[in-house]
Amino acid sequence: MEKKQTSLWMYIPYCVPMLVAILGSQLVFFNSSIIGYGFLALLAAIVVLEPILGNDDDEWEWKYPNIFLGMMYLYAIGTFATFLSFMWVMGHANNGGDLFSMAAGIQAISGVDIIPLHAEDGLKEYLVATLIMSITVSIGTVSIGHELCHRTHEPLSIFFARAMGTLSLFSYYAVEHPFGHHLTAGTPRDSSTALRGESVAQFAKRTFKQDYEIAWEIEKSRLDALDLPLWSSHNRLLRGYAAELAVVVTIAATTGFIGLFFFSLSVILGHWNYKVGVYGQHYGITRAPDEKLDIHHSWGCTNRVTNWFVDGIGRHADHHEVPEREFWNLEAHLEGPQFAKGYFASMAAASIPSQWNKMTVPKLIEWDEKWASPKEKVLAMEANEKSGIPELVEHAKKQRVELVEAGLIAA
Picture 1 (tube, rainbow, N blue to C red):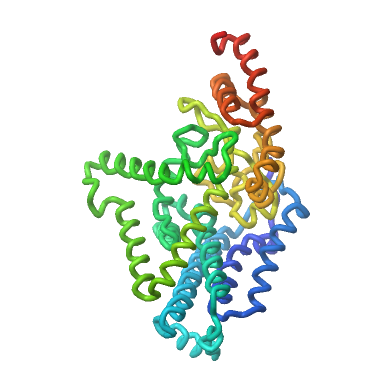
Picture 2: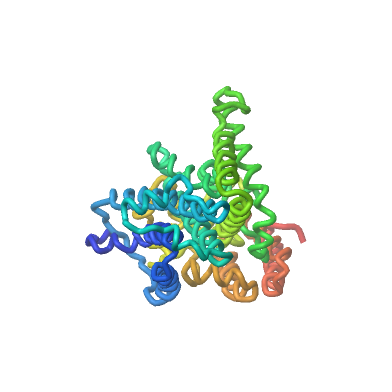
């Protein structure tokens, strides 16, 4: 497909995530209702505009890719600012002080004394700070950080990806995702592939431990190949865990029990948001481990708003096809399976099993009949039988007859 030329204004929507970090840190620091309403309006606009603005299936020629890179770096800086604002609020709640003299610094720069603005802080303000921190760091880890962790040729990108992940105790992600998920997607070995009939909660419960186990095995294999000791500073996971421990100790020392409690809540929310985000990307896909990862092993989505907000990851099939390709150059691959709706609508549907099944069951049946290889047809039939979804169980009966007739399974 011939690529179309872009104009400068087309870069602007991709900077929307940066507004989340900037507005988020200001909201927590300044406790401003105006900024708060602006933040809510931004999130509401994303949800409302997703179905209205529709899809973008074109390929574009981006002349200034450094704009995207700068945007991601600025988001990382905004994430650290949000984390510091969270720490300050929790530290002020703990002892009424000015943690790291941040309030004095803000007053010197802006002329605004933020201490009186937090005189009436209570549970609502603490929950807002926790939620903002969780949202910002989640995006920084699995959207912005996801892109950065694939830029293995840029040490600064890797640093930002792992640093943002550390703020929500997510340091394993930069190891497990590029060196695990990208090899095992669609197989039982993958901790980011949800099973047919599995709810988000069941998926999160089943795969949480698996994430860490896979990352550890990856790092062990890497160090064995280099003839380096596992328990040493060469271990990227141990370095990440040490950084996470430093974050936790710092939170506990500077903000006390109240800060540690709300930080723990933000970490739980962050990990939950991650599982909700990846739940649908390969939901129900069955791939034989000895077969090549192909276009039909990911659910695509060319929705404009989705791809603006999550750095083009809706074009997921091409991302798996060429992991090193920058998000702005990802191709649509409309010949593969597609989400019926954008990511945000799909994530909302995933929280209601009946709605999720209504949306995905026809898609899964289509996948079985249109895209599955002979081996995958057998795996899909078995997955349908185990799904507990009546329509898929019934479809499995038809599949079994067809597979017996084709000689792919015994009668």
